[in-house]
Amino acid sequence: MKAFKFLAAATVAIISASTAQAQDESFDTWRAGFHDRLLAAGAEPATAASMLDGLTPDNRIIDRDRSQPEFVRPIWSYLGIAASDLRISNGREAHADTRAELDAISERFGVPAEILVAIWGLESSYGAIPGNNDTIRSLATLAWEGRRRNWAEAQLIAVAEMIDEGYATREQLTGSWAGAMGQMQFIPTTYLERAYDWDGDGQRNIWTNNGDALASAANLLSSEGWQRGAPIVVEVQLGDDFDLMSWEPSQSRPVSEWAMRGLSPAGDGEWAADHLMQSARLELPAGRGGPGFLTFRNFRVIKRYNNSTAYALGVAHLADRIAGGEPFVGGWPENDVPLTRSQTREVQAALNELGHNSGTPDGIAGPNTRRALRAFQRANGHDPDGYLGTQMYEVVVGSDGE
Image (cartoon, rainbow, N blue to C red; front, side, top):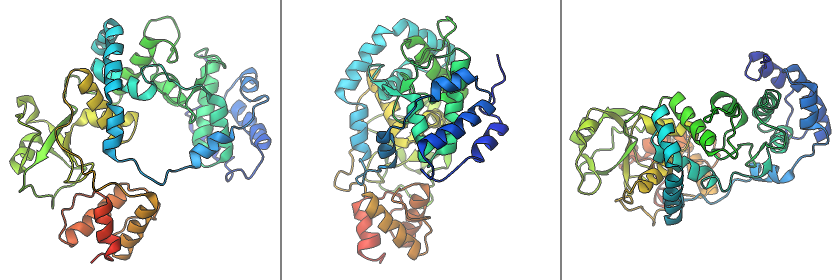
């Protein structure tokens, strides 16, 4: 195998030295410059030609990359779609159809079959919708557009290695508009690092080979630290006297300590004995008015697949429903919906004015915004749950923080 340099510091330097602002140059100029960078990174000339000759940008990709919907989908709407009745029934059918292979993959990597099926369902509707965009054209468009040029060029260099090493053909490289490929939606660098040849045929076919696709996802989770047989997430309810003043979302405590502080399993359940000494974090994705969740290390491993609390909850919940589990017990605060991006910018600016640093107002309620909001809530006698909905908008902006 040739020494490809797609992850080497030299390649990063090659790419970084080329970076220009979005579309400061024509696509043809970018393509010619990247052709040279691709060769410098180790690609075969024939591979570079097959990737770039006659290539044109897809402006739809730019539109999708730049568009940020004004309205934010509530987490309960996302979870309702992620674990819809149809997705659950299709998941059970997909599980049954591939049970022997799934059981073997699960035994090999230690990841439950239901988790793999759930990821399969969310990423490609169990292989039915893997995406038919030309991966190279999508990534080339993103690289030329410029906002994520270094990332996109690194992915294209990884694509060249895939072709040079015979892992995939030029025609096989299809997927989502953003460059993720196959049934489990791997980006090219992740493919090179984690894709797995389950059936031993010399190919890591994540596009049409169910076993390779599922084993690749299992290999990724295992490599990120999945703990065999360990819990993922438990829905909990907060007692009326549960004190949020000292709660930090990133802080882990033994479940036994959470229980002493006033948490209990949702519904009429009792703590599993093997959970009590496990360390977990309390997540309140819709604030105190919605369900609470204790999340364990395996939950954060799922977030290595997609760094989203909603996604990880969707995977875990869909997996549980496929296995015969029940819907969430707690209700959602449907009268306190998340803010639009423009409203979030207003809150961020107001928090900054009030001395609670939320960073540059960008309309995205990320960790800095939630941290600043909790500080404001503590200082003003509100439950510091960090949830930014319409009710807190009225408090921070509508009442000028008073």
